[in-house]
Image (cartoon, rainbow, N blue to C red; front, side, top):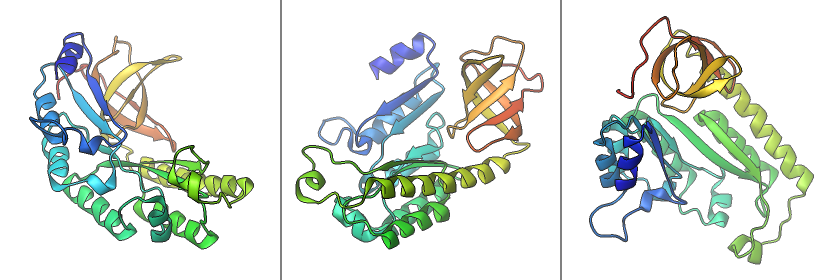
Length: 263
């Protein structure tokens, strides 16, 4: 809390709480957990946004969803790795949840926080993954329409259970093919999602310039470009979307005043 207050005093508008499994922060400490911390940071003067990652589906609970829904400075965005769309692969990974439980969690998040951006991670070619199991993962990506999907081919990590007890039996070329199939699908999903934002006005935190345009991020993490003659660095700008691609949006400010870190 002290660190964030110091950053806010120096003009920082957004902070990200980073942990391998950020959901369990504070459970081994007296005085509060992640939800309590988010509540404290939400009251930090000058701070505009808070994000946290990475969330483990096994440790998502109702209180955290309520914090996402009810705390104004906590962005409507979450990183919630699914890793695979097949229960057999999830069990082999030791993930601790089923696909049905994950689906229910996504549905509950979307009910609690309409318009929430959900980012996920997927591993393809995990030891023993069959073509049919991979196709179930492909189906889940298409069904749940994530904001972003970070996909990586499996590679053995020393010290992990998979590396020490499982045979890396999916050929590397097949792993790369599966990775590409998910990337192509997600590009199509992202294009459709961004097209639906045409005419919408988003709050954009300006991070800098890209050539002759300002660029920043919306509350759901979308990259937005716009033109403005004012010094917009570090400000929250209302930007109306005019054009889009799968990974970016472009819009205009319509002469609106730059907001100085208020919501």
